[in-house]
Length: 60
Image (tube, rainbow, N blue to C red):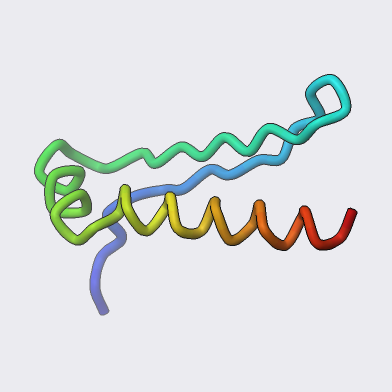
């Protein structure tokens, strides 16, 4: 098995009738952070956020 390289923390918080979606990635070390970034983590996270936004808007 591969060892974990990060812990992800995602919450949905009410903020003045809207939802704030903060996401935090805590990597074990700087090398893991850079490796994760090279794998496209930032772009992937942005895609997921846009998809969640689209679903939420459909449900209004």
